[in-house]
Length: 444
Length: 146
Image (cartoon, rainbow over all chains, first blue to last red; front, side, top):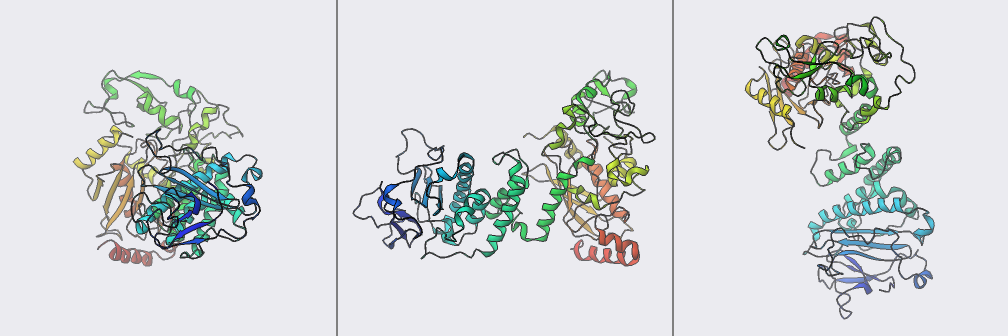
């Protein structure tokens, strides 16, 4: 498929296709393959594209090793040209699209790179950026698909030249977080891969939103695996939040425009950095060395019933439970799950190390121990610290609070930083602590 | 992810023995998400108001405490304008939904400007408590009695 650079724009559906890549013959090559409309026009590729290289490099080879990967394709069952990836382009301008076999989804991406005729040369290791580009393509396509409902004439239609054609803000937003760096490099000439005759979108506010996302991406994204699904960073959260916002599925709409949303973002960021004020995890050896005991009559409640206050399952007489130094008992598995996050009793908050039996790093409120730089060499110590579920949004304004005497009997409560050093039962405050002392963790 | 037995038990008990003045109903399509309403305690600036909250049980609840937020606007030194509540929710797993809701109800009855979350409200509460209480009453009338 030779690429002479000529494209045809359909005024009816907004589609753009390469003149010579039509699959249904050459006699009506100006008929729109998507909506069968005759209202089409041959357009020229961006004038910046280096003319001489057109002949020399008829088609950019797919630099992305996965470009041809088609997860939906099944061998033999799909006509080769009606689904899967299509790639077209010339130096400096490439259009890739994917159409799912049933024709319901169409992903497309258009990239211009007038200064970089060959991406191979510019990218020593093209895999990661291209992976990101693929993701960007995916989301752009998803949002484009959504938008196509407005313009679509029938199933199996191709891609709009750009999801922008319908004044869609989504594609821009979804596009940017993933493609930011690449895109920025290409965009410097200010040219946009957009049909000059098509409706132009208003980009100003979105530009700023995209920029904000870019900044977030640059801040957080680089430290994490950019494709990591487990990562909890804002950098990744935002594109998805935006995706759902775009589709009006979530309440995150208008994301960072509103003060409330900004507060939410900030409080999440605070949460992520304030985990250190919580009691540290107990080591596995500490947990394993806790005494176990069979339930006795005395340990049962006055009504002869008892339950583990973590799982709330009833515990029968004779069941083996794990007893903390404070004499509160739990199922071993239940208390292990808790202690591997925080080394305090779920009931009375006393540190399990308060007796000094196991870890020398803990003191009591009467006899605090200064924590050295590395309190525990055990890698288990901080294992759960990064659990994605440990953020607590309600605590977010902790830093602005001063602990009240109501909630905190011990003097060091005023400084959160000392809380780790005090293994005493009062090592937390707040209204929960107050209520805790009032209601005593009534578990039944 | 299957709903842990504990959540089912807690929900059952909340339904069977509701806390006076507190109503917590899980969503049909998400049993971890509760619509909560708390009646303003008597003799508090919030008396007569019904305050709506949302409560969500995270995936590793009870190891991670519930996330709770006021949906109804409220003028309170320990509740900020986003509805976030000044609860030290590193709270242990022995703390239940019921206990936490009780603690919030108690907080309405006993605002504590010395442990503020909404700094401006707390400051006003300290500087001019009658005026602050008057504002709280007005807000209750405006937002919690509709």
